[in-house]
Length: 168
Image (cartoon, rainbow, N blue to C red):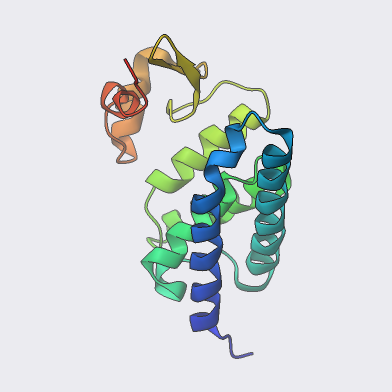
């Protein structure tokens, strides 16, 4: 079968662009806005599931760097579709093991999946919210090792990361 990977790359980047344009809806005070966000991310998650079934993980080698990153973002935001997140995580890990993806993306997705399962995260990438202008991360398995674990997968130190979320 011949794949139209150029069209797939465009589709993935367009989905990520729509995601970015709508991201503010996720935390809106308006229930209709939050529902619109959930519908968008569910639609994108469904499509990513179809893409993964047909192509496997859409690596940079297959669709280009921008579209591969778009696929990762779509997986990250498929919060109500743990099956999609788990499949994406599995495929991303396989891609890392053969040198077709960087370990940073599956680290973020692993934390996101763990948090969505109600478990403690590993790398400290998921922020629960902001209190008094300071970011509050979801609990971590080994908080004393977070920076060491982050460094192993190419993520900046925790304090640098959370400083971006600070409003104080």
